[in-house]
Length: 145
Image (cartoon, rainbow, N blue to C red; front, side, top):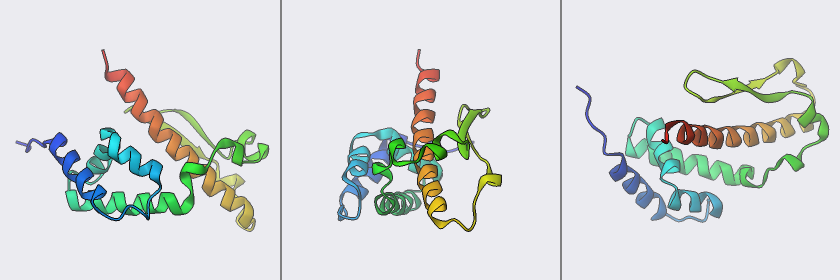
């Protein structure tokens, strides 16, 4: 028999531990999300199978990366029309659990073009962030009655 996980208690513990550290290395928008959105905190817990230490480390490292990469400042207007209209990266349908499927057409990858590759990384970060939000919204819509 599986142990029952007290998700609410773990969310509070992880949030408290995160907010007690120096928050300077993090984007204030991400900190606000951790402070106010239980779903965001719960996602880290689920990805580490409810291991608080792993969740804390994952949250800390990923949010540092998000700030260093400028994920919150990337918008579709940041990209050339070519990247947005020629399907290098795009969502196509949904998986069996309702998650949006992101397709990356690697045939269009230009290994020698470093400027293009930097833009592709930014586009990938934007699309993954959008996909994560869509997945959360779809689950809420599908499960609410």
